[in-house]
Amino acid sequence: MTLCDIFAGMGARRRTVTVYNADPVPELDAYFTDWNVELRFDRLPGDTDEAFVTVRAGGEFLGSVDIEVLTPLLEPGGDRAWDDEPLPPTDAFLRLLDGTTFRTDDRDHLLAVSREFEDRAWRVGDGHLHAGFQRPAAFRTQCDAYARLADRGLDVHLYADGAWDAPGVEGASVTTTTDGELGRYWFVAFDDGDRPDDTSQACALLAEEHQPGSYVGYWTYDPEWVRDLTDYLTETYGE
Image (cartoon, rainbow, N blue to C red; front, side, top):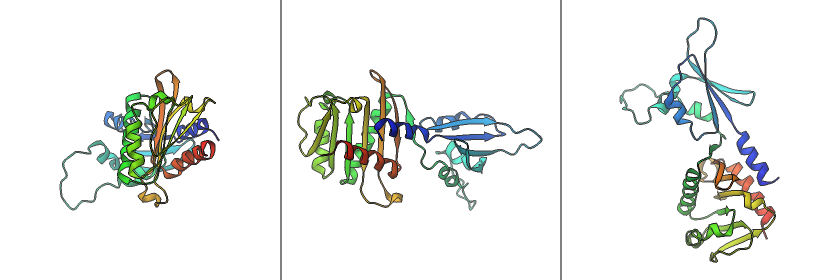
């Protein structure tokens, strides 16, 4: 396994959401902007006009829901009637998307996700935090932040390709190589230990630089995928 394999695996966790017998909904397209999801609108032949939604992973059918289930997603800030009518079972739809990764090619967005994960690690206050920003020089503006995270009680591991020429980060381990792999990928992964998956705060971002300053990145909150990445880093680059 390599970082390339993990990156490809995260990208392969793509879902296809198909809305049948309904007109395209821009709000739904906007909702899925960052999801690794292909959104389609289609109509079935015949007289039926019943609208519904299906979810597939590759060629595998995962399930379908009534289109009304999507209403809370399209109107997250809408007024509630405060009556006794049950809310549509949106969770049934979102469960069909379990394990889906998120994707962007916007560098600023990737940076914001990195900051979110660092903040999450800070709030939890323990666990293992792995960060690779490709080149040692990229850590120059990050050293104080990661020293604070280490001081907080986190087990911090930093990775880069090339000779380390950034200031030292007290309390953190630093690994450098010249094999090129660490120079191609930007990652931040927080493994919060042995918490049950339903309470886990684990998260990971892995982005590949396709050309200078241009990235495609995926991120996930799936503890299994986070452990795959952190285990690989520990086994490959650990002492």
